[in-house]
Image (cartoon, rainbow, N blue to C red):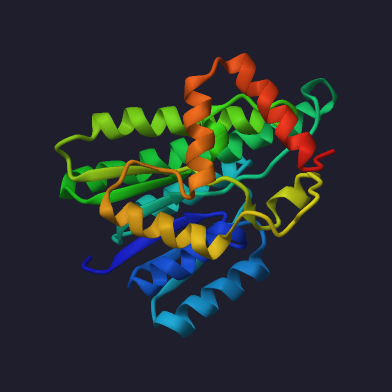
Length: 260
């Protein structure tokens, strides 16, 4: 029970992969969750090689609520000390809502919202009982803004921000902290997978730099983390201006960046 474990969803690539290396480097054993079993195995092997920690991989589709329930049942039977939960899994859908596939949108909600709720509920009672633990929810600067042509994705991120802030308040005096990480454009495969074109694919923070900030601020117990001056400026303006103005501004900015 003395060994500390971190659960990380979406750990096969991007920020999730980089977070796996950060937590392993900090001495945490890691449970890595994603669909791509081969990629997960590579991340787990690298965590063990670099840091000598224990690893477990769980290849599952978080949009499948039955598969997630099976994993949570197995989780509940373990005697491990789950010190950190990282809700990072997600994907994007680009296009006007009327033309996108509704089933895919529901899958997006399941991955980014339902799985985060279920996993948080599964680990939280034990964290509260021992007065120790961290929940890290990976959101986005889009948490603060409506985003035309990515409406469901941005709404999910807004949900994570609101949920995280309410949960942080509920957990006062328990020793459990909630961090919501809100990066902007990051150099990962996320945008290409979502069908989002960019004039400059190398723009933004690297996944490794983003993960380093998220890791450090989570363990420090900071609540809302927006990395980078430009991202913080965007959030400031998004909170200052009316939603209709922000939506138009985001649409304009994304067009200038060459998004289809």
